[in-house]
Length: 245
Figure 1: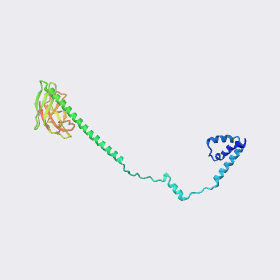
Figure 2: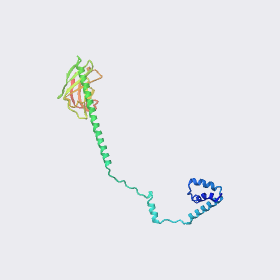
Figure 3: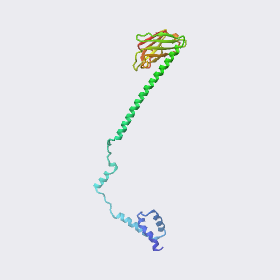
Figure 4: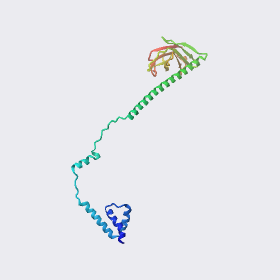
C-alpha cells in the first residue's frame, strides 16, 4: 500500500485513539487496521500517549469554599419554599361567579319546590271538588251539619256508594309541624283513621274527600283533631269539629 493510500487513515488515528472519530470513519479505519501493521503500531503509540497524559497530572482536591458552594446548590440541600398567597383577579372573579351560581341554584330549587307544592295542593283540591260534585249528582246524598265552636260546614255522605266529602269554612291555620287528621268513630268508642289533610293556602273553604274500606254505616260519625305532621295512630290533639251520622 502506497504512502498516499495510508494518509487518510493515519489522519483519523489520533481521533480514533481518544474515541472522537465519527461512526462512518470508524468503520473504514477499522477495516484498514485489520490489514495494516504499520497503522496498528501508530494506533498503539497514540493510545499509550493518551494514557500517559491522563496520569501525568496528579489529582487535586477542590478548595473547601468551592466544595461548600457546590454542595449548597444540590437539590437535597435546597430548603422547601413556603407557598405564598398571590392575589389573582381571575381567581377572585371565578370564586364570585361560582358563589353567585350556587346561590341561583339554591333559589331556583326553592322556587321549584314551592311550585311543586302548589301544584300538588291544586291537584288535591281539584280531585276533592270533583268528588263533591259526584256526590251531589246522586239522589241518595245526605248533607250533615258540622259541629264546631268556630267552624261551619257540611258533610256530604253517600252511603250507597260508600263515599263522603267534608266541606268546611275557616279552618284555623296550622304550623308546619301540624296536620288535621280525620277519625271515624266506632260504636265501641274506638277510632279509625281516615287520612290527614291541610287547608289550602288562601282558601276560605276546604273540601276534603273521605274514604274507608269499611262501610260508613258501621260508624257513628267522624271527628277531626290536630295532630303532629304525618298523623298519629290514635287521637292525641284537640278536636276541632265532629259530624254525627
